[in-house]
Length: 95
Length: 115
Length: 95
Image (cartoon, rainbow over the protein chains, first blue to last red):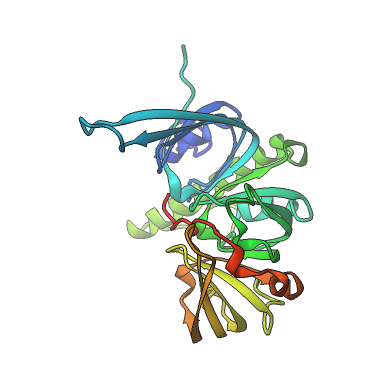
């Protein structure tokens, strides 16, 4: 039961993603990808080389009630993300 | 505690705080507390034409709970140091949880190296 | 610690979770950022009319409702003719 290796609890998955590019889904229809440098138990994160994607759903002017989705993207070099907005953190895809 | 320490190292540097009401405020980080409440000096609100509400405000206190992001300049951060500190804190957290678990199962012992 | 230090007896602008903007004199605060303001006025912003000021008297605001507290530069604030300012209200807090 060496706590420094292997996966025993959910946060271990995030720990093993340090210095790797992760995908983060946030409240408010936002998503980030960035290189993970720090986190804590609140899922506060510090990421670098970040790209944010915001989904803007335009409900008005849609007669069928489905609306259209506009996507806005922006880049930030270093970002602190407050943990209360985090829905999920996904480790790098190993393809 | 880790993130609090990181913010302390960023004092007197320029940051942009984005709030959960979509307001974006750039200023010099003057102080931070354990709730991650933030004091900014010399502030500027993005898109001031749309947000004239803070024209006469030069410094402000932002409640940590309403922060969405803080944009930092990458040159002010040693990422290797951050990752090492994060691993160390995660390890301490685990030792602590381990001790708690053993306490529940009435087998609690002090983790080695303590006491 | 105590990031509200230095605001006591100053004129401040308080932005609340629901987007309301209140100005007043900071009479006191505590660790949870509960604040007491005296001589408060709400500033109601709209696109159609200038800013309307509504006197509210003495206010105790619970810390949970606080978004931002800014120190007002009296010279700038008093030189501003609020009746000429047309702006959208500040949006409420959501993620």
